[in-house]
Each structure stands twice: as structure tokens, then as C-alpha cells.
Image (cartoon, rainbow, N blue to C red; front, top):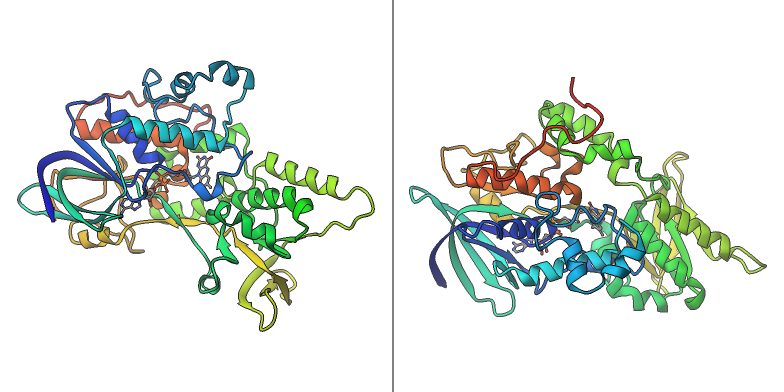
Length: 434
Ligand SMILES: Cc1cc2nc3c(=O)[nH]c(=O)nc-3n(C[C@H](O)[C@H](O)[C@H](O)COP(=O)(O)OP(=O)(O)OC[C@H]3O[C@@H](n4cnc5c(N)ncnc54)[C@H](O)[C@@H]3O)c2cc1C
């Protein structure tokens, strides 16, 4: 194993938008030695869902830097300018940029920043007692070669991973897959006799809309099954204020048991479907219902999928469902099944190896301080800052891109031991606290 002698100030694990924003802001602090490692070969933001026509759910102002440093060269507007598309963007007159464009913007930033290293997976982190640093082992994903780095601090931005119900997992991935893989399976969908989408969030709706658009060309039967209904995401401006630093501060100081209760009531702030996507789908269904041809589409609510298995004969899968109100069971058949069953935070196993250094709650989750440091069991100047897996402490906005830059301002102020970024106390019109 190659060992590097340099003592870095901070090493970042994972380069999604959260750590990329951190890396871009740190470019203003040349005295700091930072390195960021990403296991994939290049920056790619949820590539399986970069469907043409899908847009960001936050305005472009929530780019990687603007809310901390609008003069940074890594703003979205500077990206547009550098690509000589300013007039087109001006005439476009939109805040909600295409998701594909956000990805391209992030790729441009990632290419500009030398501290971002791709194709390198962090496989272990150890705290070296008495020497006041961490050892970080990384593996080159192509060659398998390992290297060891040293750093005073760590910042974890490992994001989330798709979740599939257990009965879906052992079936052939070509036919039964998660929406996270939708684009790479689009050709398979075109050849299918029947396709079923399961779930009722934004990813389910975008996948269903795309398949509905193409249905007339490819002729498959299309179904959409959800346990609940097709609920709209809560998008009113006053509701959006829950994605503010003010609400994070309010939520943070609630007792843990109350946090769990409050969080459980906030599903529609982030789990429902955008109004414009529902409108698009309804318009398409309506268009397709004109004339005498039968619409070959089914939308089933209140139906919980309990099990799925391959039929003994033919290409189809049998999906066993329970009607949640009538408590009656029924089966549904489909040749392709797409699980829009969400994501869960990804906390790499090596964090568990730091068990004795870190504090854990009764549920086995790490404890996170208000300034995004993991709570430690002993005095040490070496911090681990976290972006991922913090909903239980910091609430509903933890995965929202609109709060990433604020979080990075807080982390950088702590890292540097001075307020390089102002943190305004009042950012919204409503008051959450007494
Ligand atoms: C389809 C989709 C659309 C979304 N759209 C929006 C939106 O419009 N607005 C919004 O506010 N939020 C949106 N979100 C939610 C969320 O904010 C984003 O998903 C965002 O990507 C989170 O950024 P991240 O940096 O935490 O994680 P990720 O983007 O998940 O990146 C984490 C990275 O860490 C890498 N990694 C993990 N472990 C290691 C390791 N050991 N070593 C090296 N690298 C590692 C992974 O490969 C990954 O690239 C969306 C989510 C999804 C799934």
C-alpha cells in the first residue's frame, strides 16, 4: 500500500452535490489542504433519473455556491456564461433548470477543482490515538490498488442508496429494477408487453410519465400501483420555509422523541408528487382517451405490494397485493416491474469501526451536533463532519439541495475557527419557535 506523508486538513468521502459544494467553497481557502474522493469514474447526479424534460425541484439559486458566495466562479450563472448560453438562458425565463443541466453544471465544477479525485473508494478510516489525525484508506476501483492518506478532519457526503423490498431483490435485474436504473433499462421497457411502476413519489411519477409518453409508439400495457394515493407534494411558499436554516435550528433543539413525531407528519414536504408532474400525467391520460381506442393504462391506489414472483409459464411476474382499506388480496401480472420504492441514507460500514470514538443513540444512529460534527466520546480536535444520515437530528431539509450551502457555511466556519461566512439568524417570514 502506498502511504502519503502529507497531513491534509480535511478529506471528503463521496462527491455528490453536498461535498462538491464544500470543495467549491474551500477553493476560497487556499491555506487549507483538502482532498475529496469519489468511487465513480466521474461526477454523475442520479444518472438513471436524468430523464429529458425533468427539472430541478429547487431554483437554480440553490447551486453549489451562490447562497454563500454569489461572486464565486462556480455559480450556475458563471457556468452558463462560460458556455456562452447567457442569452438563451435569459430568454428561457425559468428558475427550475433541467435536471440534465444541473448535472452538466456540477460536472463542469468537478472538473475545475483539483482536490476532487474520482474512481477512488474510501474503504477504511481509523482515528490514530495520540497522533491527532485520521488514516484514510482508499482503493482505486479500476486497479484495486490501495493508498493511505492522513487528515486532521473528515467530511462525509456519502448520500443515499436505492431501497428495494426483499421480495424484489433476487429477481432478474433486467426485468425488475429500481427507478434509479430507469434510463439504462429504457430499451428493455420498449420491448415489454406490460410494465408496472410501484410507488407514489416524484420518481414514480416521472417514470410513469415518460413511459406514458412512449406508450403509443411501443404499445405496452402500463400500470401504476401505490399503497397510498397520488398525493401532491406540499409546495406552497410558506411550506417551503421549512427548508430554511431557521426551521433546522428550531427542529434541532426539540427533544428526540418529539423530533420523530414531527418528522413523521412531514412526508408531503418531500415525498409527494410535484403538481406540474401530476398535471402533465393527467393531460397525457386525457389526450390518450380521445377517440375510440381503449386506453391501455391502469392506476391503482390503496394497494400494498406484498410479494412478487416469476410465473411458472411465460415472461410475466405475479405481483401479490393487499387492498389496504378492504383488506382483500388480489394479484396483478406484469413483464417489467419498476420499483419506485425510495432511498435510504448510506453510512459506510467503516464508520462503525469508529464505534468507540463516536456517540450513538438508542436506535444505533450516530449523534450529530448542531454544527454537523459527529459527537465524540473523548476529547479530540479531529472532527468528522456529516452531510448524510442526519434527518433524525436536523429534520426534513437534510437532503434538500437548498440547505447544502448553508450547512457548508456552518462547517467551514467551525473548521477555520472563525466566522468567514455570516450566518443570518432570521431568513424566513414565519416564526417556528416561541
Ligand atoms: C432522482 C432524485 C432527484 C432529486 N432531485 C432533487 C431536487 O431537485 N432538489 C433537491 O433539493 N433534492 C433532490 N434530491 C435529493 C438530494 O438532495 C440529492 O439526491 C443529492 O444528490 C444529495 O447529495 P449528496 O451529496 O448527499 O449525495 P449523492 O448525490 O448521493 O452523492 C454521494 C456520493 O458518495 C459516493 N460514495 C459513497 N460512498 C463512498 C465511498 N466509500 N468512497 C467514495 N465515494 C463514496 C457515491 O458514489 C455518491 O456519488 C433528489 C434525489 C433523487 C434520488
